[in-house]
Length: 255
Image 1 (tube, helix red, strand yellow):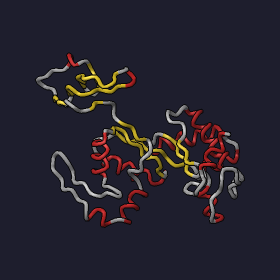
Image 2 (tube, helix red, strand yellow):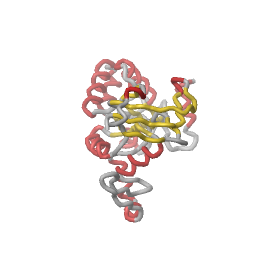
Image 3 (cartoon, rainbow, N blue to C red):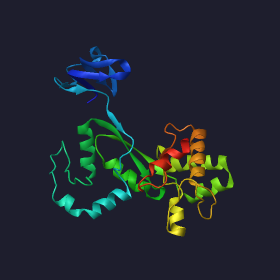
Image 4 (tube, rainbow, N blue to C red):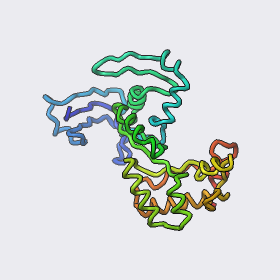
């Protein structure tokens, strides 16, 4: 349907200073237009009387696709056997799962809550083809993903060498190759440290072999993101993630 008219809703649009006024909203070819441009004989007309009409919500951090999500599903098979909601074709595909819902329920539930864009915030480069396959199956909403680079060996090599331009070029290629929207750091350098020593590292501890710190990783990848002029510069979960009191580590870079 290329033309939609949403009538009589309480409209909230902070950018345009509209705060709960009863208005009609018209959509034509994917763009909001003046209601006078709508052909009522062809349009889908929705009576939103008594309901709120507002811009769609954006969730920039929700684990909705990829290898880790499927591991969660494997850990809770009973979650899917006991929660099935049969399909109602052509309007709705079968929904199942509460702890880790299937792709159809994820899309429908976000749409029911008023969201239009959801971001999978941590996809490993080698697993991102699968992440996109799942994102493609999630209905209704728009999706994006952030690619993990926090313990990427090539990135760490370039940081240790001080090769800033090559680092930026590599990260640009990685974003293009994985078709992701932004760079993600989780506990920077700790994966490498864990493999070598069996423990993670705090913000200013040396990462074995590379002789750089997590602070160096955050600074250099952040600078590369700035050099590339990425719309979403850098998404960071700082070190000691999951440990009590780790907020002190998170605050430390900004002192």
